[in-house]
Image (cartoon, rainbow, N blue to C red; front, side, top):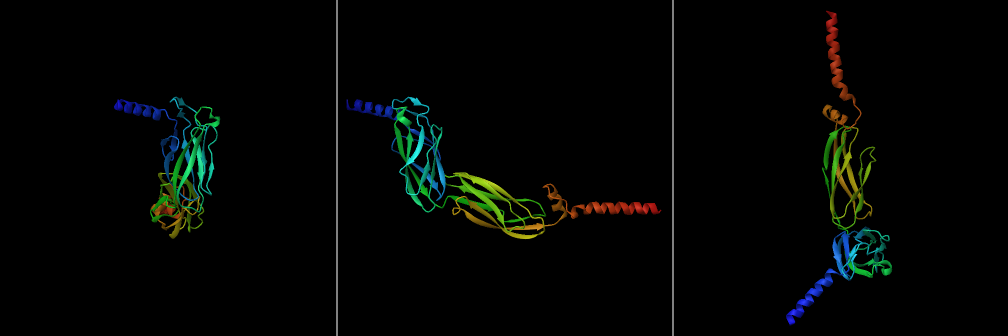
Length: 276
């Protein structure tokens, strides 16, 4: 009899779990959470902003699917200095934006709430805890090559590899400091939890050896302010000048030297032929 009662209890418990109202988190990590659930989101840098994405679809207490059950995702009881932008009403998926202060590090718990406005779908509100680690260590960057050479006006790509281990997408600015008459910079995005590669082209219009710094700066400033020393050797040669033509560089006089030589040879032969 006791065994039968225990089996009935287990079955009822499973039915209750399968029909429980939940919120489906779709980013930056994926999870289905019931009321008072807990979710570790990951790392974020001071001063960064990140998004929590959640589906509006859920089930009600009887287990029936509700397509637009949650109407808004919001943060409540945030730590001092934090800010949030609740998702727009009836957005699907819902996107809650949370901004972190510049001057903190550590582990923080955030209270997040999925709201059924006016309890129209008879869901009430669902609250869960999200944990984030605020740290300056969210990026690993490599730059190669550090010693480059090319012909006059011939572009060379520098490769930048950015590993973003955090949960926030970070705008980066890439520029070169120290090249003559150079003012080109590139704005890119390092996606959260991704390794992203970028190519940054440089060239110089005069021969010489040019030491310069490739600088990478994040929108939050203090997270990434890194300068990578590069040595650029620019040489003048017939081969390099011809290669530069393919990159749209204006023909330099050295390119015409073979033409001048042929003209001279033809004029010499024709001149000798006419003198006989």
